[in-house]
Length: 235
Ligand code: CA
Image (cartoon, rainbow, N blue to C red; front, side):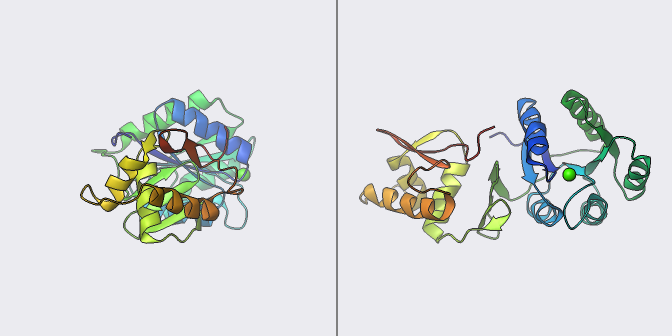
Protein backbone atom coordinates (compact mmCIF):
# COMPACT_ATOMS: atom_id res chain seq x y z
CA UNK A 1 0.00 0.00 0.00
CA UNK A 2 1.29 3.44 -0.84
CA UNK A 3 1.39 5.99 1.88
CA UNK A 4 0.25 9.34 0.65
CA UNK A 5 -3.32 8.36 0.01
CA UNK A 6 -5.79 10.15 2.23
CA UNK A 7 -7.19 8.03 5.02
CA UNK A 8 -10.93 8.21 5.61
CA UNK A 9 -12.72 6.92 8.69
CA UNK A 10 -16.37 6.09 7.98
CA UNK A 11 -18.55 6.09 11.09
CA UNK A 12 -22.00 4.65 10.50
CA UNK A 13 -23.87 1.92 12.36
CA UNK A 14 -25.95 0.86 9.36
CA UNK A 15 -23.67 -1.70 7.79
CA UNK A 16 -25.10 -1.50 4.25
CA UNK A 17 -24.63 2.27 4.11
CA UNK A 18 -21.16 2.06 5.66
CA UNK A 19 -20.07 -0.61 3.19
CA UNK A 20 -21.50 1.34 0.28
CA UNK A 21 -19.50 4.40 1.25
CA UNK A 22 -16.38 2.32 1.94
CA UNK A 23 -16.50 0.56 -1.43
CA UNK A 24 -16.82 3.84 -3.26
CA UNK A 25 -13.95 5.38 -1.34
CA UNK A 26 -11.77 2.32 -2.05
CA UNK A 27 -12.53 2.62 -5.75
CA UNK A 28 -11.46 6.22 -5.67
CA UNK A 29 -8.13 5.41 -4.13
CA UNK A 30 -8.76 6.38 -0.52
CA UNK A 31 -7.64 4.26 2.38
CA UNK A 32 -10.72 3.38 4.40
CA UNK A 33 -11.27 2.68 8.08
CA UNK A 34 -14.66 1.73 9.44
CA UNK A 35 -16.43 2.09 12.74
CA UNK A 36 -19.98 1.16 13.68
CA UNK A 37 -20.22 3.28 16.82
CA UNK A 38 -18.75 6.38 18.37
CA UNK A 39 -16.51 4.71 20.93
CA UNK A 40 -14.83 2.59 18.28
CA UNK A 41 -14.52 5.65 16.05
CA UNK A 42 -12.64 7.55 18.76
CA UNK A 43 -10.29 4.64 19.37
CA UNK A 44 -9.51 4.25 15.68
CA UNK A 45 -9.15 8.01 15.23
CA UNK A 46 -6.64 8.14 18.04
CA UNK A 47 -4.42 5.34 16.80
CA UNK A 48 -4.75 5.79 13.03
CA UNK A 49 -5.10 9.57 12.68
CA UNK A 50 -7.44 9.68 9.69
CA UNK A 51 -7.31 12.71 7.39
CA UNK A 52 -11.06 12.68 6.98
CA UNK A 53 -13.93 11.46 9.17
CA UNK A 54 -17.31 10.79 7.54
CA UNK A 55 -19.61 10.77 10.52
CA UNK A 56 -23.28 9.87 10.73
CA UNK A 57 -25.31 11.84 13.26
CA UNK A 58 -27.49 8.91 14.28
CA UNK A 59 -25.32 6.40 16.10
CA UNK A 60 -26.04 4.06 19.01
CA UNK A 61 -25.13 5.37 22.48
CA UNK A 62 -22.70 8.22 21.74
CA UNK A 63 -24.19 10.29 18.92
CA UNK A 64 -22.37 11.86 16.00
CA UNK A 65 -22.30 15.31 17.58
CA UNK A 66 -20.47 14.07 20.65
CA UNK A 67 -18.03 12.12 18.46
CA UNK A 68 -17.53 15.23 16.32
CA UNK A 69 -16.65 17.38 19.34
CA UNK A 70 -14.23 14.84 20.73
CA UNK A 71 -12.47 14.26 17.41
CA UNK A 72 -12.25 17.99 16.84
CA UNK A 73 -10.62 18.53 20.23
CA UNK A 74 -8.02 15.85 19.65
CA UNK A 75 -7.41 16.32 15.92
CA UNK A 76 -7.85 19.92 14.85
CA UNK A 77 -6.53 19.12 11.36
CA UNK A 78 -8.99 16.36 10.47
CA UNK A 79 -11.72 17.07 7.96
CA UNK A 80 -15.08 16.09 9.44
CA UNK A 81 -18.08 15.56 7.17
CA UNK A 82 -21.36 14.84 8.93
CA UNK A 83 -24.14 12.74 7.42
CA UNK A 84 -27.65 13.80 8.32
CA UNK A 85 -31.08 12.58 7.36
CA UNK A 86 -33.18 14.55 4.92
CA UNK A 87 -34.81 17.65 6.31
CA UNK A 88 -32.99 17.73 9.60
CA UNK A 89 -31.77 21.29 9.26
CA UNK A 90 -30.94 21.56 12.93
CA UNK A 91 -28.56 18.66 12.52
CA UNK A 92 -26.62 20.47 9.82
CA UNK A 93 -26.32 23.65 11.81
CA UNK A 94 -25.39 21.88 15.01
CA UNK A 95 -22.78 19.79 13.24
CA UNK A 96 -21.09 22.84 11.79
CA UNK A 97 -21.18 24.66 15.11
CA UNK A 98 -19.54 21.72 16.80
CA UNK A 99 -16.63 21.79 14.41
CA UNK A 100 -17.69 19.75 11.37
CA UNK A 101 -16.34 21.05 8.06
CA UNK A 102 -19.20 20.00 5.87
CA UNK A 103 -22.31 17.85 5.78
CA UNK A 104 -24.19 15.66 3.36
CA UNK A 105 -27.88 14.87 3.43
CA UNK A 106 -28.77 11.19 3.08
CA UNK A 107 -29.38 9.65 0.63
CA UNK A 108 -26.58 11.07 -1.47
CA UNK A 109 -24.58 10.23 -4.54
CA UNK A 110 -21.25 8.75 -3.41
CA UNK A 111 -19.45 10.70 -6.11
CA UNK A 112 -20.69 13.86 -4.50
CA UNK A 113 -19.30 12.74 -1.16
CA UNK A 114 -15.94 12.07 -2.79
CA UNK A 115 -15.97 15.50 -4.44
CA UNK A 116 -16.71 17.08 -1.05
CA UNK A 117 -13.93 15.13 0.62
CA UNK A 118 -11.43 16.25 -2.03
CA UNK A 119 -12.59 19.86 -1.84
CA UNK A 120 -12.27 19.86 1.95
CA UNK A 121 -8.86 18.22 1.87
CA UNK A 122 -7.64 21.00 -0.41
CA UNK A 123 -8.66 23.51 2.25
CA UNK A 124 -6.44 21.95 4.87
CA UNK A 125 -3.27 24.00 4.97
CA UNK A 126 -0.07 22.18 4.05
CA UNK A 127 -1.93 18.92 4.08
CA UNK A 128 0.34 15.98 4.56
CA UNK A 129 -0.89 12.45 5.08
CA UNK A 130 -1.21 11.53 8.73
CA UNK A 131 1.29 9.05 10.05
CA UNK A 132 -0.90 6.76 12.06
CA UNK A 133 1.21 3.94 13.32
CA UNK A 134 -1.07 1.12 12.36
CA UNK A 135 -2.00 -1.24 9.57
CA UNK A 136 -5.59 -1.87 8.74
CA UNK A 137 -7.77 -3.82 6.37
CA UNK A 138 -11.54 -3.79 6.45
CA UNK A 139 -12.44 -4.49 10.11
CA UNK A 140 -8.92 -5.48 11.10
CA UNK A 141 -6.47 -3.10 12.68
CA UNK A 142 -2.96 -3.70 13.88
CA UNK A 143 -1.60 -1.04 16.22
CA UNK A 144 2.16 -1.29 15.74
CA UNK A 145 3.04 1.03 18.55
CA UNK A 146 0.81 -0.55 21.18
CA UNK A 147 1.37 -4.06 19.75
CA UNK A 148 -2.35 -4.66 19.70
CA UNK A 149 -4.67 -6.26 17.23
CA UNK A 150 -8.33 -5.49 16.77
CA UNK A 151 -11.23 -6.93 14.83
CA UNK A 152 -14.36 -4.78 14.68
CA UNK A 153 -12.85 -2.57 17.36
CA UNK A 154 -12.48 -5.49 19.79
CA UNK A 155 -9.04 -6.52 20.83
CA UNK A 156 -7.83 -10.01 19.97
CA UNK A 157 -4.84 -11.02 22.03
CA UNK A 158 -1.97 -12.31 19.95
CA UNK A 159 1.40 -13.67 20.96
CA UNK A 160 4.40 -11.73 19.61
CA UNK A 161 4.89 -14.32 16.84
CA UNK A 162 1.25 -14.23 15.84
CA UNK A 163 1.41 -10.45 15.86
CA UNK A 164 4.46 -10.51 13.59
CA UNK A 165 2.68 -12.85 11.14
CA UNK A 166 -0.38 -10.61 11.02
CA UNK A 167 1.93 -7.67 10.39
CA UNK A 168 3.30 -9.45 7.32
CA UNK A 169 -0.15 -10.37 5.97
CA UNK A 170 -1.62 -6.92 6.68
CA UNK A 171 1.31 -5.20 5.01
CA UNK A 172 -0.11 -6.32 1.69
CA UNK A 173 -3.72 -7.57 1.79
CA UNK A 174 -4.55 -9.92 -1.07
CA UNK A 175 -0.92 -10.83 -1.77
CA UNK A 176 -0.07 -14.51 -1.41
CA UNK A 177 2.94 -14.89 0.89
CA UNK A 178 4.92 -18.10 0.75
CA UNK A 179 5.70 -19.87 4.03
CA UNK A 180 9.31 -19.01 3.37
CA UNK A 181 8.60 -15.30 3.02
CA UNK A 182 6.57 -15.33 6.22
CA UNK A 183 9.27 -17.20 8.05
CA UNK A 184 12.00 -14.84 6.82
CA UNK A 185 10.00 -11.78 7.78
CA UNK A 186 9.07 -13.05 11.21
CA UNK A 187 12.14 -14.96 12.36
CA UNK A 188 14.80 -13.41 10.15
CA UNK A 189 16.71 -14.79 7.19
CA UNK A 190 19.26 -16.72 9.21
CA UNK A 191 16.66 -18.76 11.02
CA UNK A 192 16.31 -22.26 9.65
CA UNK A 193 13.12 -23.66 10.99
CA UNK A 194 10.53 -26.10 9.85
CA UNK A 195 8.09 -24.32 7.56
CA UNK A 196 5.30 -26.21 9.30
CA UNK A 197 5.87 -23.85 12.24
CA UNK A 198 4.20 -21.18 10.11
CA UNK A 199 1.16 -23.43 9.66
CA UNK A 200 0.87 -24.00 13.38
CA UNK A 201 0.91 -20.29 14.14
CA UNK A 202 -1.55 -19.57 11.36
CA UNK A 203 -3.89 -22.19 12.81
CA UNK A 204 -3.72 -20.52 16.21
CA UNK A 205 -4.41 -17.10 14.73
CA UNK A 206 -7.38 -18.50 12.83
CA UNK A 207 -8.81 -19.91 16.04
CA UNK A 208 -8.82 -16.40 17.49
CA UNK A 209 -9.75 -14.48 14.38
CA UNK A 210 -12.12 -16.54 12.27
CA UNK A 211 -15.81 -17.05 12.94
CA UNK A 212 -15.34 -20.60 11.67
CA UNK A 213 -11.64 -21.57 11.85
CA UNK A 214 -12.28 -24.62 9.65
CA UNK A 215 -13.59 -22.37 6.88
CA UNK A 216 -11.28 -19.38 7.19
CA UNK A 217 -12.22 -16.21 5.38
CA UNK A 218 -9.61 -13.82 6.74
CA UNK A 219 -6.47 -15.88 6.36
CA UNK A 220 -6.86 -17.88 3.20
CA UNK A 221 -4.69 -20.84 2.25
CA UNK A 222 -3.10 -20.49 -1.16
CA UNK A 223 -2.41 -24.08 -2.19
CA UNK A 224 1.19 -24.75 -3.07
CA UNK A 225 2.23 -21.28 -1.95
CA UNK A 226 1.25 -20.18 1.52
CA UNK A 227 -1.26 -17.71 2.85
CA UNK A 228 -2.91 -14.47 2.02
CA UNK A 229 -5.18 -12.05 3.78
CA UNK A 230 -8.58 -12.31 2.12
CA UNK A 231 -11.64 -10.23 2.73
CA UNK A 232 -13.34 -11.52 5.86
CA UNK A 233 -16.47 -9.81 4.74
CA UNK A 234 -17.56 -9.84 1.13
CA UNK A 235 -18.62 -6.50 -0.30
CA1 CA B 1 -26.79 5.74 11.51
